[in-house]
Length: 299
Image (cartoon, rainbow, N blue to C red; front, top):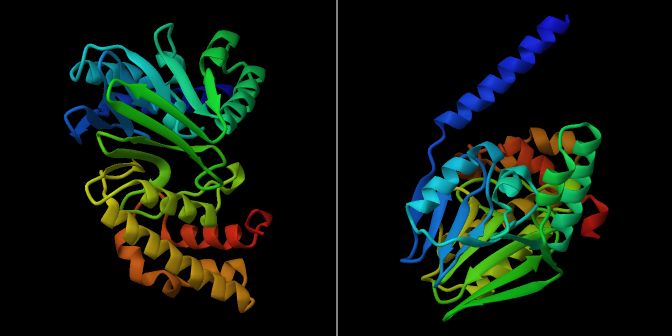
């Protein structure tokens, strides 16, 4: 039995490494100085400033070398700041590899708190050593807003509450007119709302509305997952989520159970073909919204 378990573990490790070997880091050029990198995990934002690079998210640790090599094709300037939009591993998994004397990790307060708890659990399980634990944590944190100035560019970081998680940050490059929304926006697909980490459907929609207050029709949007987007697509996305939310709220008011809502394909049928083929399928988005609307966080 021990040999079988070892074989299964080794097979899993080999499969993971094979997947990482097959990942290509692609570049979307948004402006002369801003780029979106796509690989495996959350979309990475890159801003090349006067003498430094401003990076947003870092995907999984095994991809760090490829990500660094890709950034080097864009610039030889150092990565000075790395912002985590939230705490999930597909956005923070490379923290240890990127955190150097030259690169400072930045995040909202709750991101550090959650990464600290997760890291301590890994240390207790001997999956993480003390040095890497310390390098995984953001060194600068903020509660609501933080602003960086780089020559003529202003970089605005602002916290949105209980959206994808309880620690989400959006990053807006004012002159470049580029907004990185992290996982508060899943372009072209139903969103993953992490209810266990403080996320909610109402907070998710409110985060979008806050983004609309900042951007204009020319703004380039980097979503947490999916293709680069724009204001018009975001407005449509809000309409979809509000409609689905209202539909499910009516079911809740009518006394329908979670299982009834999950199993009723008609509730989201008009949107499923366009938005329901990603990580979150139609049944799961109905479940997520139902649970969010019936939880204490929405009260």
